Amino acid sequence: MRRWLFGGRASSFADMTDLPKSLRDALQAEFTFWTTTVATHSRADDGTEKLLLELHDRQRIECVLLRDGERRTVCISSQVGCAMGCVFCASGIDGVVRNLTTGEILEQLLRLARLLPATERISHIVVMGMGEPLANLDRLLPALAVAQDPEGMGISQRRITISTVGLPPGIERLVTENPGYHLAVSLHAADDELRTRLVPVNRAIGLAEVMEAADRYWEVSGRRLTFEYVLLGGVNDSPAQARDLVRLLGGRAALVNVIPYNSVEGLPWKEPSTTARERFLEVLREAGVNVQVRRRKGARIDAACGQLRRISARAAAAEAVIPRADIASPAG
Ligand code: SAH
Image (cartoon, rainbow, N blue to C red; front, side):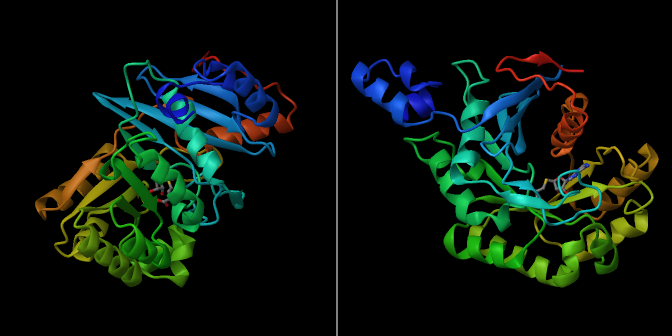
């Protein structure tokens, strides 16, 4: 069953053709193979595919498959909604509904793996979908353990990134239990006043504590840290703010992942101008900071997590028909 589930890509118990027929029938009668249904499946020209999955309680979550050269990266959600309240993010607008179960987290991986041809496998996992993963470690870690298991999906821990708003107790837990993951910390501002404005949970934590926890993770894991920084035009994109960021990083061997803001309908934030972005990057580079600008993928299919769910919820509220199919519908 494991082989069928993880390598063989069965989509029902009936597919497991080397099991006795009577057993397959019994499994079919007693168990449910999938707990989710595919509410929408969209595909962008750049190869990005996005699934909106409906859970047993009708809640919806998003997960994405990204194709980049040889890489097959999947982006998965950890919660329905999010409690962190980052002001520019679509996932948290209505707060958190609930944690995903281990099975629901795993099911995103299995569903996405089945979008690939038989010759391809998922190579990387990023937990950067809806939700705050460090607020649901109890369910996330067992799912990732299956993803890593050679008898599961066999994805090396080094290729799994957990992105967090920076919850020190969660980081501490990873330090003691499981420091092998690649950790990405969402900063978005280098001073507490602005960070609290953009990432309200910062009020109770503060940057010093976030950086201290990140340092401990780095010491124990030996893995370079990534700091994420969403550039919002006229808000956190000035050269002075770039210098603040350089100062905050203080020579740490870190990578700064600059993320172009993906506009969310109804929110007032704007993308920075190209000049502002280039100036910001230049300050970082001149100070010797490793910078990467995340390329936008799948914008046309609202691949910025949390957006599709909102749009679909609105459509449902308006009693519009949402396509419900296991086959791809053209994006756009
Ligand atoms: N809760 C985790 C995972 C969230 S999603 C965290 O905060 O890291 C991963 C990244 O996408 C985070 O850095 C998040 O701030 C960023 N993000 C959220 N909304 C965005 C948007 N509209 N445009 C660009 N990046 C966004």
